Length: 313
Image (tube, rainbow, N blue to C red; front, top):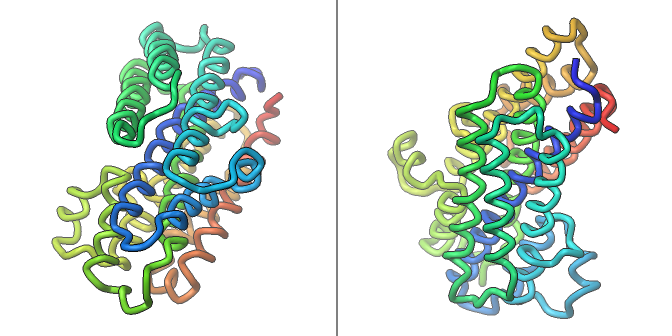
């Protein structure tokens, strides 16, 4: 049985690696949405910070929500614990703590990602360079994930790290969808228009789901279908349903290994069951923003339950 401290290190190493990638994806979504606007883009950049749950911290540092201030805060600001720089630093610190639980390839890919991103983000990013910087962040974090998936034994070490990845990914998908909710179109007449549809398409592109959406739905970009894909489709690897199916499986394996089923397992099963019985019509009837807010809260409570049940210290 792993010590709680080791389980904690694996869980948060994976969460922060995923968070670094997800912050790049959130910025990518905001950048694409801002480019579609015919008026001031301040609201789009505000929406990113709000969705990242960092509005109060941002306002302490900046007076205006612009591409430069928001990207710097989310990418480089060490006072922001969820910035890419802070996330990769924390991931490496946790990885170093549990280094003996990782394969050599896994540790080296984490260390190389840390060195690469520290160099990349050492100086303020020119707005024109932002897309290539975001691509580099996604590439470096994907190399770690590939090393982890390809070399780690499927045991409790793998399960705790996988839990961290999936909890963070589910949180991020919900927040990226919530960005679209916060974007204020120039007029209600734009809803359902080509501009509105392009913004939804941009959400798909930000989570690398643009092509696979076409494979599944063979239809134009429709808000209901895109939301269905990212919330309820169990085969889409960034959907809420996919993440919680994986979470339940990880907890089931841990229960078998430890001979004990914790309350966190029951919480995860209930979240998954709600995702499996819901239709996208139910979600929109309830309110997309309200549904996503509720999910984000449930996901946070589940994460705390895991920490309590497995005695993270």
